[in-house]
Image (cartoon, rainbow, N blue to C red; front, top):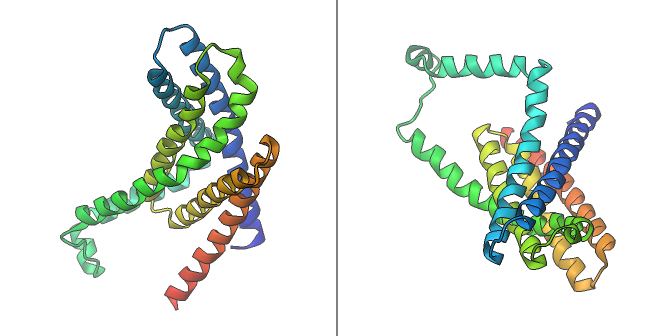
Amino acid sequence: MNLEEIIRSLKNTGINLVISGLATIGAYNLAGYTISNNDFSSTTEKLVTAGILSAGAIGGYKARAIINRIRGKTNRDIARSKTLAEVSGDEDFMKRQGINRGEFGIVRKGLKYLLTVPFGGALGYYPGAVGIAPLCVYFGDKYSWSSDASLESGPIAGAVIGAYAFAEMTAKGQRERLATTAAALGGVTGGYFLSVKLGMDLWGFLALCAATGTASGAVGNVIYNKIKKAVKK
């Protein structure tokens, strides 16, 4: 990956994070408004908040793809995907090229999801706890809901978002992105436990988690590319 690709990747990641972050903030406030105006139990509050947070974050992430599609940036990718789909459906062409589908293609695909989706959910749990903390601090007292319910909704939403993201990346065959994301989430999780052990304040907690997540993601990306090059040799 050259410098131009790295800058483009960082730019796209930054834009995605900003859009998803704004959507999540809006979802948190929507959850607070909804719960404040309804008589829910603590468990229901937690689940409703987690559901709205998950929908908001995923919706914000997908909004970026929709914007790109409207601007025509993904037309080439769409055309390429359609061409590949048509080619893969041409049995004669596949045979002439010496490409075998394999009798257990569906099983293999299913196994990929069984491995990656739970992994994404597990890795998203503690980053969800990290992300919910500043929202509770700055918006929690604006609504009449259980503080425990709002705090505990973060890990649930993080797990749901992680599982969804890994499912999407698996479906699109984005192995490098999977490796980088897994490493980054693992870094955030490590930062979470380290900051708790050190007894850091909110800003220190967030800064450490951000630093460990960014560093781990970068290292994961480098390791993936080195392994990929070694396998090709």
